[in-house]
Image (cartoon, rainbow, N blue to C red):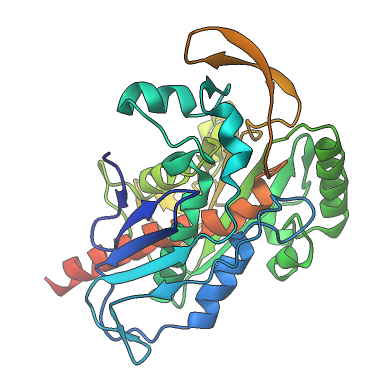
Length: 355
């Protein structure tokens, strides 16, 4: 199986399945001498883990990270950082009923057709549990970028949207509620709606908005390695993601150039920021902001038609512990992937500057 690594200089390789003994990864290319804040890493893992509130999967995992290499006396050595995340609360019997069936809108069918077999327990390698490894690496990457601030938040659930620009929000309030929405009134509506959806045995999608501040000018390349292109690839690699837009996004397609152009100030900043902090694929020093769309979770706790491996259609009801809406737990994953992209471009830029 290809495609288990991400990054150029700051590179993450992950391994493990949802219901195996453990997940884990290797972070390669981390500079030597970084004093790691292990409590900050633990905090990010606690934000992603299941079972943290009544509106997410009730699987109970501590998600404590065991570092195996690349760190000595709390500092990175410059060698590969190996880590493990034990799986301690698997309930594989919850998936025995899908051993011979393919669920709609899951990876089951294409996975088995491509590889000739599949680990049906929780989706195996295609499970969103793999993202725990990304959060570990993202938490390390953030410590290479101490001046850059990365804040993601839930901006919509179903038809419920925050009706304020991000500049009017207090990001410190994002963690004050289970939905991770920094607007209290909207967060309550979202939480009530997710609870109602869960009672129906159904699921709902939503969006996560991410704002990156204090990015230096010059990250990214003008052709294939555009900064926004790599951010898009990173976000679209997250399970359940169906869309990515940055800056003015699809709204910009309805505007005239005279409305969309960001006029300069004398210091090189711009009066507006419809470019989303990136021009010609290169960061311009303004805030980078983008939005990521997540589909509804495909596992429903209600009956739906499934395909068997004998090419017949039968009715089957989902079982197990699943999120009725993934976006609250996706917030730290979006931040982690953004940190991986920025750390990689930051290190690439340092090489250019040294030459």
